[in-house]
Length: 188
Image 1: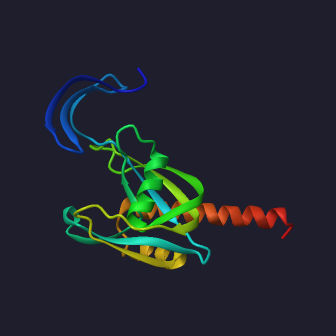
Image 2: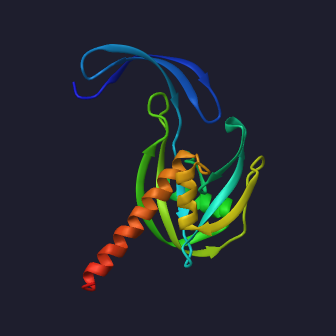
């Protein structure tokens, strides 16, 4: 047995976005455990970077976290929607942007001990402005700042949102790797 599997599942709560269940699970080592699992459809986020190496960050009010957070444009995957389509849609709705160039920065698990949510991250470039279409109940401010400053905010604790931290670090690593490859190709 290589992966765990569900032996018994008892639904506890079904909401508009999440489902909570008590699951009896057989683990790969043969042991059994009972876990509280929150099922979520997943999400997608975009690191939108302009020609001046400025990143689009949203300052968004989040009741669950107790106030305002700095975040990437992101959102929940709708039923029958691919993660990339979610990233494009959320970039347009929340930041008023579309991108001509997209680079997959990979997935991340937000809290794998209890939460099934996987967030798919992308780097978006070649940006064009669109009308913003915030949803009812979204309090969002759109800000542009140098990527270097956003990374400083990751280091000093100003940015605490997991998807934003990982997205910014992965985007920076990709950009640095691309720059190194370019300089090697040019014999520098």
